[in-house]
Image: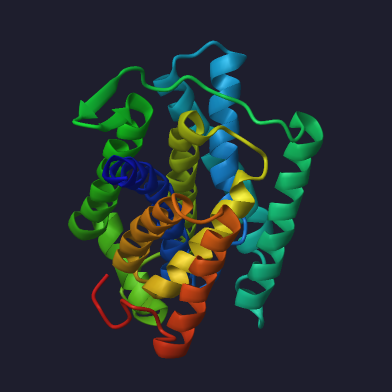
Amino acid sequence: MYELLLQQAVNGLTQGMAYALVALGLTMIFGVLHVINFAQGELYMLGGLFAVLASTMLGLPYAAAGALAVVAVVAVAAVVDAVAVRPVLPTRDGPSTVLLSTFAVSLLLHQSVLSTWGPNPARIDGMSGSLAFGPVVITGSRLLVLVAGVVILALIEYVLRRTLVGRRIRAVAQSEFAARVVGIDVARIRTLTFLGAAAVAAAAGALIAPVSLFTPSMGQHAIITAFVVVVIGGMGNATGAVVCGLLLGLLEALASAFVPQEIGTAIIYALLLVTLLVRPNGLFAGRAS
């Protein structure tokens, strides 16, 4: 039983890293644009799809397929931003309208992939090999998710804290009015943040595809879980998104060792309800992100 729990913990941290990256993208967009991007889950799904297509149809190695997938998803996100976000955000009910417009985009992307690809899952060969730590075995693909996830998180932290663009993003997140006063192009920063969040989601989708297979519905599950993560961690709090994403993946995997998946999902939503009742602003509300 002890070995099973350790193995499930490793598997849970892998899935939790994907949740953390998707939730972090949601948090970035909410923190800067003050809107919820319902299409974030489908951008995650497209990351997995484009990685599969680049590997199987173009014959690219996994690393090149993943990089190409990120570029392709960023291009899609640029269209989404130009069509469903930028034109409606300045309107009177901008945030509510963006919620609806990105929800429509998510349905459009999901149904388009479902009608062309079909519901069948697809596999892509990831990183070969494995590491054994006693009874616990970590496959190369799972190890890559963890390592690449940490690198992505560290890179985002560096950009936000140490670069001019990052300081401008933080300035816009704190006060759009003050940012405009000092000459920051707020519209450009919004677009960069939206595209950056899309790149993070695409990378997560490409990384997780060799681990849990690609399916057209993976984005729907990811966005729902990411919303749970963001609400529990605190809207707009990057630290909360990462920590709660990892913990949620860990809890999901450990629960599956004892109870059916449906009950495990119910436990997660029960935690969401308890959080809303006890700390409606999130567990990390008020802490620096």
